[in-house]
Image (tube, rainbow, N blue to C red; front, top):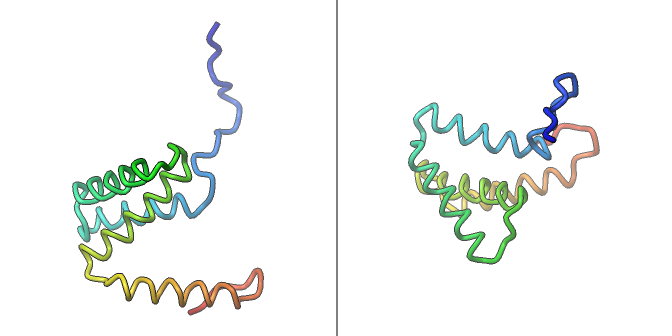
Length: 109
């Protein structure tokens, strides 16, 4: 017999990690502010998911959120005018700053 969810139980987490929510919030903000269209976002995310599936990636949350990041990178390069080289340089600078920042301190570029 089907039992309804316990209405007094705390809700299950929607995201496995904060960055997943942040990535989707970034995409939503880009759409809402007119930097990209919802159609472009959907098409780009769909293409990233299709590419992941064609590459043999399992249908998991990790695959989905990796595709979200890939789509954000691609659409940023295509729609906003950031080159892949500039994005790669910024990512490298961020990773270097992250590695040299003491635990618990804010990362600064």
